[in-house]
Structures are given as C-alpha cells and as structure tokens.
Image (cartoon, rainbow, N blue to C red; front, top):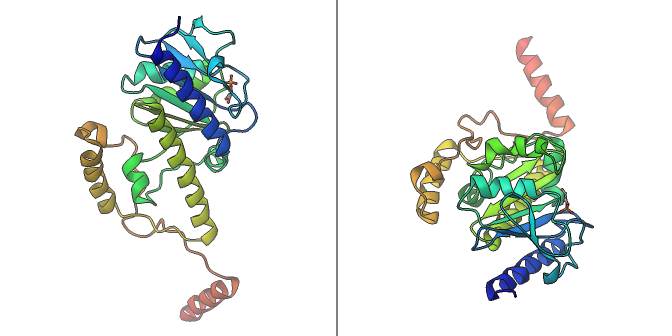
Length: 257
Ligand code: 13P
C-alpha cells in the first residue's frame, strides 16, 4: 500500500527528471535525483535510466544506509553522494546531480565558478567551489565532496558534473539552473574578453542582503571560501587587438629611449 505523499514524491521526482532532460542538463542515462521522505528514507531514480523517459513507478526507496526498501529496480550508483549530503545537511531534503554542458566544462577545465560577476548569483549561491576528481560511485568521490558539503549548496565535481541540494526539489533544481546559467554567462564574458568583477564592498553588501533575503543567520550567510572580488582592478581581464598591443609596446619602448 502506497501513501498519498509517496505518490506525490514519485510524481515530483519524475517531473524534475523530465525537466533536467529537456533543459539538456543530462544526456542519455546521466544524472540522478532524490528526495528525503518524511519517514527519513530516500526516494531516488534507478540506475541507468534516461531521465527524459523515467516514470513514477521506476523510483526506488532506500534507507539511510543505502539498503533498498522498495522498488523493482536498482537504486542510482551515486546514492553514497546523496546520502553524504543528507547526513551532513539536515536542512536538505532534495539532491540533483547532472552534467549541464557549460558548468561541466568548468569542472572539466578544473576551474571553480568563484568570481563575483553577477549579483544574483552571489546572493543565491556565493561561490561554487570545485571538488577534486574521485571515481563516480566510490568513496573517492564522497571523500572529495565532504569538505564542501556543509558550507555550499552547489558543487562542481572535477571531470564529472554538478551536484546541488535544497530544502525541496524545486530549490535543488533552481540551484542547478543558476549554476548552469552562470557558467554560460562566465563563458560569454570570456568571449567578450573582459570580466568586470564586483568590488569587495559590493560583495559585502550582497551578503548582508542575502541574510535578509533568505532569513539566514550570520554564520549561514558567510561563505567559508569567499568570492574573488577585485579591489584594485588588477585581476580584471582586458583584451587588445594585435595593433593596439604593438602600439602600446612601441609607446612604452619610445619612453625608455
Ligand atoms: P546512475 O545511472 O547510477 O544514477 O549514474 C548516472 C551518473 O550520472 C553517474 O555520475
């Protein structure tokens, strides 16, 4: 016999799986999604399933140790990662793991998304750190994630993808959405050849706003690994054409003569 709430969660996971597939945050059988049920068990996607076609009845229920308690199929191979987040974050009731192209490109390049480029991203997530590579589905991966889980709601996993968590599935999905959108904007600023970062004063003000906006206490509002604001303009990226560069060098050389 299945409760109304269990059916609601099956439907909800299915809806967000279809959404991450439609938004190209996963391809083929990539990614996995889970929620913490009111009784403390975890409902998750089965392993090796296309998230675009998954159905409510495919979901698997496991206990907090990872043992299957309900479902025909095998649970996702990444449940250790989800269980780590549920264990370390009592505030998290949903986890989304996906491989969105732009954010995963950052993860593959070994670059964290930690620049204060966009006010709303500073407000929503702070920085998005990069956890070093660990083989998927093994303790190597959870060991790399552990240092970050307490302080961050979205993580890049080197050479792998992104994992986000939230109070509910919509929150966790929104964070995935923000990470990918921010990664895309970050790439565009690189293409434009110029990144004008927020100043440290601006970031400070955003943290005050963040506290008010999300009703956080001070410790929750402050990131352990701060953004990379500029105070002196030295970390700003600029671009010059070849002739501008030649002109600049010639002028510097002429002043030395
Ligand atoms: P599962 O099919 O076992 O959920 O794994 C998919 C995945 O994305 C691994 O990183």
